[in-house]
Length: 138
Image (cartoon, rainbow, N blue to C red; front, side):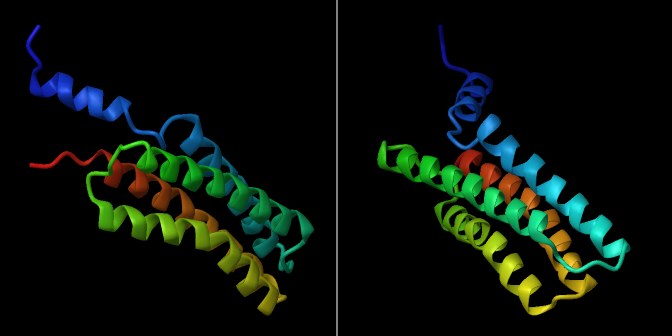
């Protein structure tokens, strides 16, 4: 059976080590923390322990995603855009600690707004990370 461009594309898309549940969990968790922080912002509340705990759990899931990506790299798989991939990976791992530090520096409702904003950016970076892995050379 000859390999067509469509089958090669679908095979490359299924070979993404950072897809599926591994990417879905941080995205959903990030949106939950963003929702919690948005409610706190609208209620004029400073960041609280559940927000910081959510950031810690989010960071743990992002570190798992990063380790799986690095293991895949060690196993011989390569992203389609290595430079962009490593840039997004470094940014992704730094976002929750950045939110934590900035929210601690701003113990007002704006600290919660910072957490909300960074948690809304995180899913976008996860999706971009996946896209840089699956880009096929033209």
